[in-house]
Image (cartoon, rainbow, N blue to C red; front, side, top):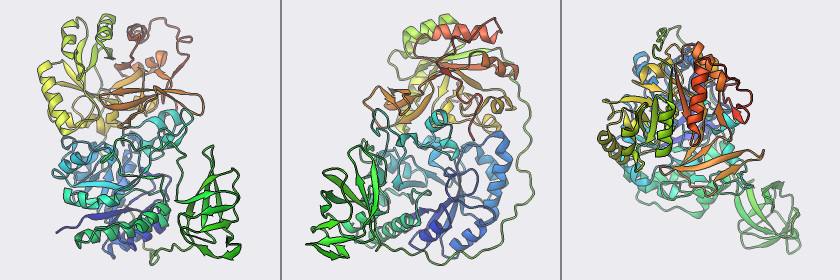
Length: 637
């Protein structure tokens, strides 16, 4: 029987050693570029060969994460980094962009490809040919995980931090904070306060108790999140998950409270078993490490819920949500100094409570040791071959007339948009009145749009509805639809993350180009057959978590609207995109297609952009107030 793989994070050399010497079957790590955890220590061409050699001598595999979106100007360097991984004999690379698969296969035919959870892997139809393994989305219910594991080599996260948004479907940090999660620099806006609470902050995943179910489901790899965490965390997770995986195969599986406590002490924001088994994963308290609950501190005394020693770390959680960190310097029991105390004892410690009664947590233990094993011997650096991996892109002009594409959110809006002269209307395929819209279109072509978040079953049901409706085309929200929609003209939602000319040549249709690219990056694309988002509500997050509040107000007073669309929570940017006269700059560079996404007054905006794009005399100084140009000028790193 092939045992499930235990896959640990290696954010630096110490973490790699902690993983290898505490039970990992494989590690995943990043190079200095194109890693979804760019701030981690990571590896480079100087030490990657030593790291991989160290692992391979201990029968541990190495997967290199090159799982970010890549700009045109970076493609050559991206493939040079793959070449480094290839020459260093990495066991696989992890990528976000499925459009790169044919090029990787052509240039590195023996290199295995794992498709990152950043690719939003929700259904079997979205899994491209050529991938060895698929990292499933953490939002999937267990029955869907089980079904997908029968159709592909499935890897699942079993422990660590969770995102509020579906992976690869988050623009919050990028648009509102200027640091892109799709580029490895997430600023974690979900860990900030909104409406004076941490309403987006997720608990940490812990599926230790679910090991039997996932092994029986056929999962091939258990992945621990945490390339930004400590060697102690990595070693603890490796040791404990190794123990219980081995127990399962020895028919003696029984999780102890002590091991759960050790995992909590390593790091936790409270544990959850995730969307596989529950409907909510948030904890609105401060998003910091909880540690172990020690008891209620009052006048320096505490009835212990777990043992402590001199030198242990203690955190006090104040009523305002802040936390103070302390180290135990002395302990008294019955007025006698002791070096340690155990659960159930009433003791006095040298930490005074700034409030009358305050929860105390143990955050570190002096007695917790872990094995780092031998140091990594230094070997020669990788010297990549001088080779060109990409052909030069040729100009692919767009010879079409100027066209405006607009979403319509109800029948009344669709009629108004048609009257205003939009070339294409996108209408929700799941709305009950969808079939009524096409006959009303006297000017606009009628496209339906699909959800972004869909299962196998939902895709098949929606495709049947599309075939019955016979629209002029489809705005596709998820890759899983592509196998079924060949007869239709296809446009692609901006969450396809089309970022470069490789993507544009791969998809047989017209994408809305990623709003994370700036003007110069978009204008320099050789293939001009794409749509630019020029006006409207930009979706920052797509989440399975339900929110009660109609808007989120952040620390700066910005209001982010919340809406529910097809069983998905969407968080919208606090300002609408409004390029207005700046749109003409795109037109000068051969861009002909423009996208508008508004719920109200869209017909007026269509008229304005018709004037702008025909270079009519239009002063936008007053109207552009209250709008944002997004990444038009700044872009992302």
